[in-house]
Length: 113
Image 1 (tube, rainbow, N blue to C red):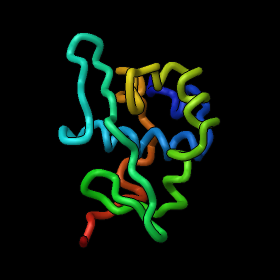
Image 2 (cartoon, helix red, strand yellow; image 1 turned 135 degrees about the vertical axis):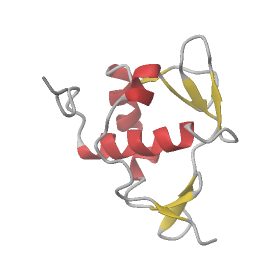
Image 3 (cartoon, rainbow, N blue to C red; image 1 turned 180 degrees about the horizontal axis):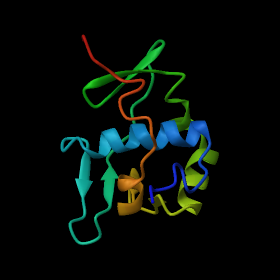
């Protein structure tokens, strides 16, 4: 039996925010991995300049990344066990890193600057 798509019933904004945070978690210069727990702390979230922002090596529409500045998104992700309290930045749990958002590479493109 195939795994259920979006079993935690995240809304579109939560899914986009989680997917972008997963991209950041895979950038060693931007994140710190806890080998024991599997969690990854993102040192700082990017900020928009103009109509876009840089997420790791990619350029993302500021609209698509609006969840980064929405406290309700982080509360929901924390409540569902995908984000945990950290000393600084945002910390994704091992479950948050592994969660299939279904978005993959949908709205990220390599940066040209």
